[in-house]
Length: 344
Image 1 (tube, one colour):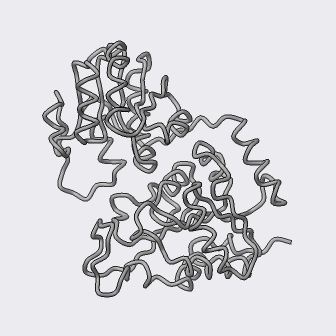
Image 2: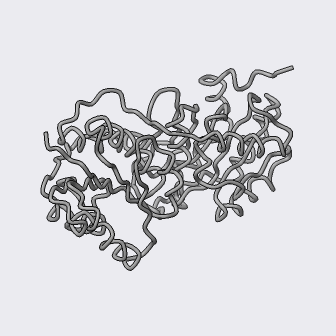
Image 3: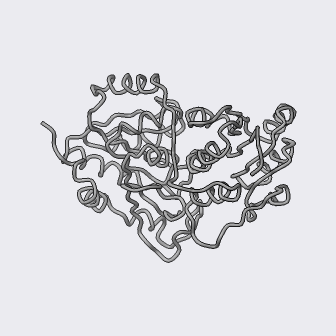
């Protein structure tokens, strides 16, 4: 096994993909306990990577080619022995090559010509692998034994204290039961209708008298407002109220996350919070919540999964809209009955 002293780990985006890469990083950390491991990531996700156990240095890059290329001189000065590229695109592979690392590991089926810049190309079987398991193939190719995938965050006490402050502003404290709801997603085709979220949240609140806390980024405030504005019962709106780095501490306190296929879904899975996810154009086998205790609801139609950001079906978004609030509530009653228990 090579004696790597400095390793550049390249997984710049997106939030869910970064979480999927955590077990591979954890394996490399165990394989090279004395090595200095640097994680190259887009600046918008740097706070999350800063909370991943075993990362010696977070290397943020700005969006755009200029932002990436500006980092090349500093990267080369670090004299990396190896660069591991899990992104598999031209830009990420080019950064591995431009870093000066003699060994560059990536996927043989990477896109945009990226495999030409690797010294070791990792084959991916045709099976419909989950992203977590596909990334772990790289660790196996580097000589690591694969056991149970590990999602290890190092959550500072200050994060838990900030979550406590957020909850206290809405009359809650640590240990209280509440349901987190994530109504947005990067693709419009991944978004369950706002009216469906509103109906489900109202019925959950009515049946269990459990607070519903809506989350989202600053850019998703309008999506959250559209749902809460259609509700008959009160709900907590925390869209834009916390940084992305606070999500692991926040979601591990939730009793349940109801969500579209999204980055927060994968954070919740990593901290072992139960999930009920609504899927449509994407594949739960490839990118569903990883681990046990989670559920995915999807309506199978011939064109799903299409992996498309636009819908060409005669009934728009039927893969999502055919799943009703009643079906989701019945499912929660079956798989998470404790959520619906009233507390005196």
